[in-house]
Length: 397
Image (cartoon, helix red, strand yellow):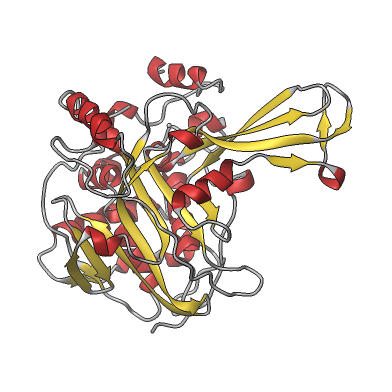
């Protein structure tokens, strides 16, 4: 068993994994080759949500590097449906095809296995499809190892890319006892009703919640129900941070169309359990957008950053070059950020929304990236287990 993986968990105050399912040092966050954007995806009728999600996953550098290597299919022994065996040829075809657009046939054929409630021809919610797809990839990596402890399950290639852990800390007002619990997550849904920016929404997410009255806390030390505070923080940060801005009301089906600013470079440190220390910077690489006035109608498309460092608008079959300024002005629904510690050598932040300390920190990142080009973590639980606009129907524009 890899002791480095154990050391990381012990340092975080969590139970170390019984098994390491994928060596963390083999995950490469830097694109292995530079090229322009690949093929667009054909819409076969209300499949814009699927196309947009697939493109965002295709341009996730560590996932694409792994799938392009075809390592999974060479070792896979899974019988029947395997999401990783579907994603591998899809990503290879998109990034290496000479045609302008392809049909994501393998994904469409496995559609009902990704989520039992999905139906071809009916517009679904992009966040719901993303959650189901990533969870399906996670299940594929686990194979017959579903009986493993949660720490071991978090050592798959998928969870090591997208996954992290939240800490829920409850403090009893009466005896001041502290109770900590940990929850695995693959994305973070954020309420935007009272927030005008991504940092503000994250600040709301980690703001302590008062537990009292009918919602009081049963303290094991006091042995009675007491008033307490409960606070969520990011305990183990993911290599790829996926954020869902909660724009759809599950009860009214209405949409929050307000402007929510998001930076090209995000410092996650203030929202960590260990808030002191060096900035923990993330670089934006994909934005998924919903256009329309409600969850019952509209269209999904996305902006992705290709391995050549340029941004492209991907709208089904259409793939067009765009500027970062255009990317940052969108009514974003899903945001994808990658850890900056693994930026390509020479890459620098250029966004006016980047924190003032970004250049000096990235200089350190560039220096460290001259060493190894790789870095050394199932489903959403607890507070993050929120499927926004689940099974939302919409017609194509």
